[in-house]
Length: 400
Image (cartoon, rainbow, N blue to C red; front, side, top):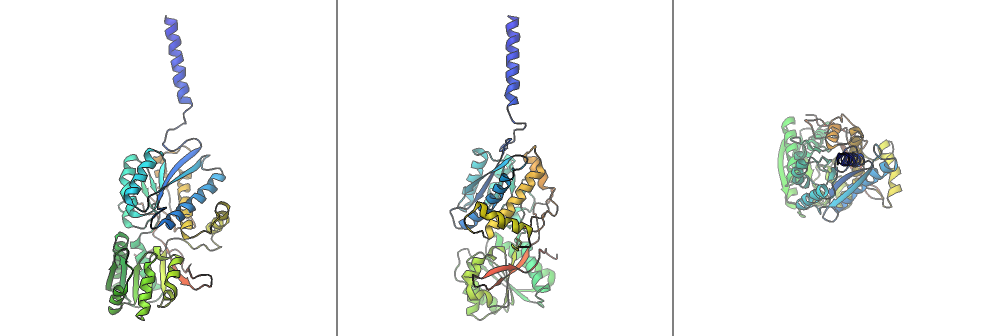
């Protein structure tokens, strides 16, 4: 009887040891010996689906390249993208699905500040990092959030850089400023940056001209700014609005200097604006991405690799997604082979002036979650194949 009991105990001990021997050396969700499962949430079917398809497509292309090169510490990236139709409630539901059903290691790239802020409490409770919410809203990283890392310079910073450029590079002497902006959080950030710049440089802000999302007639805003005597207009707009504003100014024969924020530095803006983009005394934009010059090694690599995985031509948002994926991969590399979420957080906190060739230099610390405060200045040029924006400055940060 004792022999049988001893035999049974030995069998159970061997079975117990064998069971754990076949498990991976760690049990972090979303990570196996061969894969790292990453989730993304963007608009693929709603009002900014063209952005969502671009950023996710650019990221997927970079991940495919990395996987074909052997992956990260022997693991391939599995990139699962959810469609939120640009709806915060749908984004939250998508985050829960990715965590609870798909069991992703982290969430990478969410398109929109409202979506990112709405889902963050869910991610924080689960200890799931959110890497690069694709937005320049200042609330993303201020105050710092442990599991959130945002690379983009916010709109407060961009507005300061724009005013600084007008004074120092355009040599404008005591300009009278006006600001036209969409009356939401990003627009309010831009307004705050303009006001802080006016205070710092002792400049007059002679007119504020907010508009509601969906506005198509900007004649009253333009008339108000012209009547106030503004000669420098700081403009926070998206894709369609600049054309309405610039055409209204052209109709009134008003020629100020225009400086717009990143969302409007897409070539489609120039197509919609036509001649009005060149009517004033200058049209400039603060842009968060380096231009894809052939002397930029990152751009050379991007343009060489892109046709291998894509049949369609690349665009601005593909380039953005590529740069975001490059940041994600660098963090995974630094986190090491024994990958955990906490090690990933610590890895990103080692970034000091990390240069992607796409964004400005990125620095993250335990008390700093906005990656860069630098952007470039762009201006439009006429081109028979279609007017386009080009880079006219290097990366530059705010002077104060």
